[in-house]
Amino acid sequence: MKKALYIILTLIAMVQFYSCQKLDVAPVNKFTEANYWVSTDKAKLVLNMAYNQMYSAGIMWRDEFLSDNLVHTYGTSDPYTIRRGEATAALNLFANEWSDAYSGIKTCLVFLENVDRVPGMDENVKSRMIDEIRFIRAYIYFRLVNYYGDVPFFTSQVSLDEAYNVKRTPKNEVLVFIHSELDEIIQNGNLPKTDNLSADEKGRITTGAAVAFQARSYLYENNYQKVKEYTGRLINEPSKYGSYQLFHYNVKNESYFRLFTPENEYNSEIILDITYVPGLKTWDNMKQMAPITKYAEISADNPTQELVDEYMTLNGLPVKGTGKDPSYNENDPYTNRDSRLTASIVYDNYRWLNQNGSVSTIRTAVGSGTDDSYKGPAERQTKTGYYVRKYYDWSMTSNNQSGLNIIMFRYADILLMYAEACNELGKISQAEWDITLKPIRERAGFGTAAALDYPASKSQAELRSVIRNERRVELAFEGLRWYDIKRWQIGHEVLNGRIHGFKFAGSDPNTDGGYVRVEQYQFNSNRDYLWSVPLNQMDLNANLKPNNPGY
Picture 1: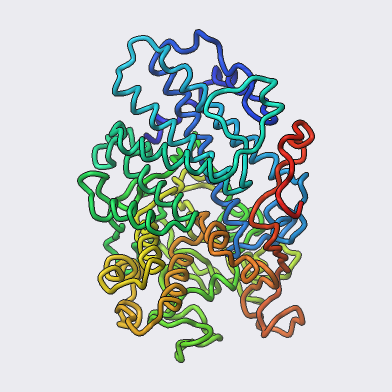
Picture 2: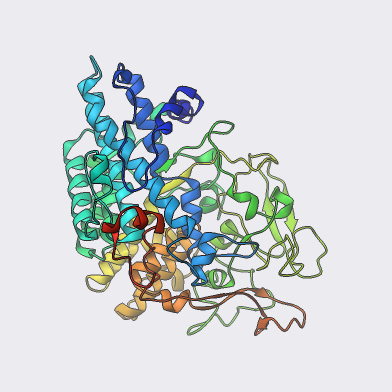
């Protein structure tokens, strides 16, 4: 699959597809010549294009930048503008996401309207490809409604006149369509189980992926009964929907870290990921997040102290607030911590494991005198004292081009969704805890009763906090935190006020209790859970008004 799915990238002939993709409001032009659809291979090229338009490393990292896990610390960026409360309807990100999403939808519509032209196409192959395209179309609409709320919605290409007069469809109507599509796709049985994928099909959409997507789509609506139903299918019915389990590596406390290395792509935990190919299809976001000594050009996006503080000690206790671990030492803050912290974030005196098994030490502290150490808010090094480790492709060279796959759905997320749903529908039981949070924490290296045993004395609200925290640290840097903030409606709590870096050793006045002040965020609950409809789209089509509140 690594190479087969992305041969499209080397075919110059496909440029003709893009040359007529100018899309202001909605897809309106001819996508290709009528005589294009002459073979199954040609149809597969369009399907592959749709895969490329569904999701990417760039989208994942951009969504992560919208959260409180990472802070932009050098220059400007559109997510940074949003988090500072300075976005307007003219922001490029609003226009680009709109255009890219509708270009993807256009690809899907063209495929669906033309695939029957292919002569002699195997009906099973065709049915499978159609359901893959329907999944992709549903996922792109899912992205759109979560960004913009009400959006133009159609399931066939529209004329030029229709394009300039189309109105926004209520978000709930689009979600009803998405749920209906996914249920039909699951019931059709055209998609294979992950267990049955051949090596060259790894990365293609499966029935398990459709069930996982359905669960997530209901999660974002806080429909916990449905979340429990669909996650329960993946947990309890592997023979029907595919076999998944948490990935484990044979070195203690390295399982989580190894989950995100190139040697372990397509492992037992992966439900669906986006395939990248070294030298053919790559991403380069690490050039602004990794340590300078690990090929980064500049440190522009850094993990926050707020995220670091969420990782418990190995005693199963927090490092801040009520119930704080009495053994935690702010002057030695990274000792005896959750192994997922080390797998995800580079800190001072970090032991960096290289692909060949050697270990190097990275110093980030003030005055340590290395290329990675904090040198001030205007320098190219980290501004928080932290760098990103998770998703670092240790096989990439100094050109910063990574061929590491990006995960869309994995089994740990299914377990966490199930746990949250169980708790919201009542109070999570011991049996439910034991099949969800307990194995996730065991995989992370916890061994104490405080971390692993069911906390029966905690209330439903207290357990809610436990589950939410577990979700944050397990899924950090996977593009999901912003959507959790959004659906929990906690933006005013976590995206409003100071964002901090590590505890500063000197007497710098720009600190809070010794922690470096990095940025000041502003969050308006009446505006910032949705993006603005792009200004250029409203200029072309007044029917897209009124805009979302606050813009």
